[in-house]
Length: 364
Image 1 (cartoon, one colour):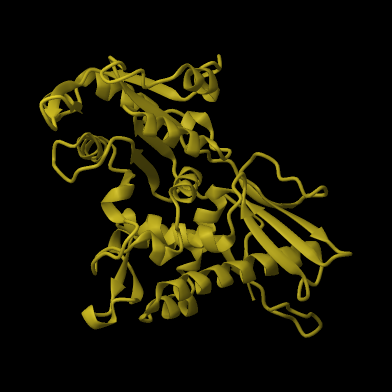
Image 2: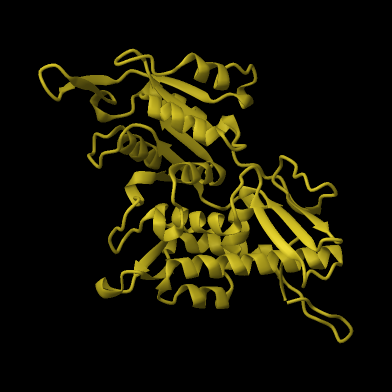
């Protein structure tokens, strides 16, 4: 019987940074493309993801897929899951819509220190973009660890006219590059609060109220046969990565089937191993328990989390979700990219095998 280790440290998962904000264009001078290329060059340990670059709310081609394919069907859901799974989020803030985007990221329990807001020097190009409400909500804290990082930059501005009487402003990084001063401040943010080496433990919670830490906590209601498990995003990413070491899991993921079946299969395997682990640690037979697994601070199911996990891995070029052919566009297999194999191998240590003795019962 496979179990997760009761205590572990895993800091080898690739660091993820999401870039959000201004209306996206695939042109080289788009601010998010310029920023992505800068981060990749300066910090190759980061996997930089632009949401619109990979997924859309519509069917796509053989290389990519739509949000619908992974059962993610609204922007708030996607951005909250992005905030849970990412190490850093950088928002290029120029419009009221990006102020709303900031609110969506912060509506869960994402630490403010993980967010950076890039703000143009003049916020009255069209209107006052950074309202007093946003200032009060996110920039009033004295402690740096409680504040969103705000970085001012000085864009080049171009007036684009739709007609004689109407127009709008476009902004670009000066000379379509990140200058020395701006780059220094961005790198300071990326290096702030580096990933913790603290041990993650699986522990029992007496009151069904999870703590704000990286531990996995569970509450077992023996009278109602309920098991509530609260998993930190850091623990979830690590343990999910460990599953790719299991031959039966990978054998299933290499089949050409509809993507939701891959998501269901992977979620089921995670649920089974984690429940077996808790059963072993607590000494409680969980066979007839109703199990619910949630990411700490976010009201999403294990299935949602698993779907976004696959999305994130593909967007970071760690896996490919490959269509069988043009005639079977809904059938996909999961292919592990070479850059991810080393991480998967290191995660193998998070699993352990329990062999039943002659006198002992295993729960499967």
